Length: 606
Image (tube, rainbow, N blue to C red; front, top):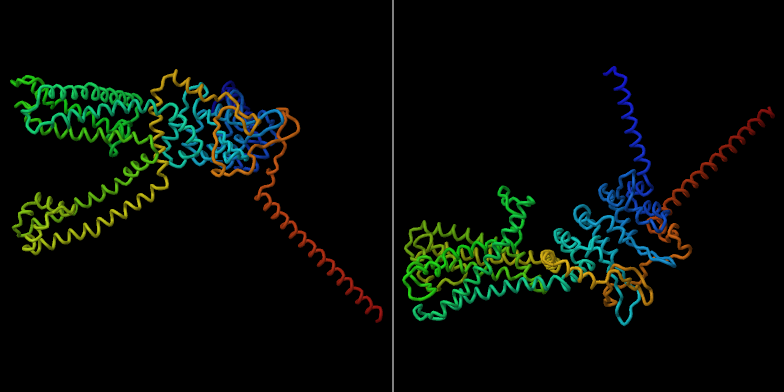
């Protein structure tokens, strides 16, 4: 301990200052809303916010200032796990209220205060996304000619506070929830993005890819097979083949190399790496099907260029320009053709993202991808059985040509599994009894067990995926929208926003001019039956400084009715117990007095 009085005064002053700061923080931060949040009860929050002025009601739930710092009660409710009050806050903020002069709706305040709201909910409270998105939709209870008006207030899902593209679509796509992506509000703004902006840019990009694929097909699969004999090929055909391959190498290979290099450098700079197999760091972009396929295609095209017969024949003695059949190229033709065939398959495989234009076709393709793992397990089990039975049959003392070695035996069992093994060879196999028994066991395992197990696995996998088919298809389209909109210029984006006319007020019903910031559509009246007006309308004062009149359902819910009934029963039970006690006490007193009187009478007679 120190004996310096100045040091003691300094510590005393510091502790006093800290205590004052803490007390001030507690006093200023402990509002009735924060106290209600700590109880995690919807009724307590409703009572706490009912006294707030109608003009500042939303900010009471979104902002509390303590000194120079501000916190959000809404985010505090999420962080503290008070999700019941957080959901009640969302419901209160997104309830449309009206007096005789104005409409009040907290959507603008909510997204202005929390521009990353969607991202935060996806990460910490995904179950609050559905009520949030429900609050962005208003449906009329009046149907006209079988159609109902619907207002989607999705301005803040499309643009941020600065007028740029909001990242809500990217956050929802990364969330990878097939159910929330099918919410009507998400479907609405996703379709607006796709139909009015993204599909054109996406189609232009894929059309370029489609043209290069057609050129690749002509150069690799059509022009070089016009004649059965290579000697009959003309110089014009060689020039056409060279032109096609030049387009592929310059127009496709260089473009893929540029894109892959850009993505690789971007992930390396940001440190966006993921472990492959738990130990090998790989850039995150390669975990995308399209990008990983493009990376493999780039490698194939580079290898094709290195093995290109035309390049190796340039210095040959051939009298034909761009010859592909010179002696120097003969040794590389097989490897070149195999890589070319693999690249051709990759081209067609990467073209499947064009299915995003149709939800039905896209869902079908995604189902194939989802159940492909079951087919992979079947093939792995089939290979295991083939290797097992082939090694066993090769150990037998037999002289069958089809099983003379493991390589021939494996090929024969593969043909048997596929049902293409010649039936005449079974007659020869009958001469070797043990071979016939082994092959019969193999055929039974394949036909009775593995095939039926594969069918059951495919059926089970399809049942699991079926409920979310459209959701997975929309997730796929959402990813395409996110990557495509990165190519949109600022000028095109400004035109797109002007076309939405978010600054114009939308009608609720005929002649009832409502709120801006949304899009109005009509839907069949039987799609979402609505019998109650979701707008809370109040009479009386229209001053923004006045609180809203107490809502009828604030204390009138079923839970409150049961609570009041329970309290009434408890009170009645206590009263009944008290009345019984008083009666019992009175009768006891009367009996005691009667006994006393009798004793006195006996004494008097004596």
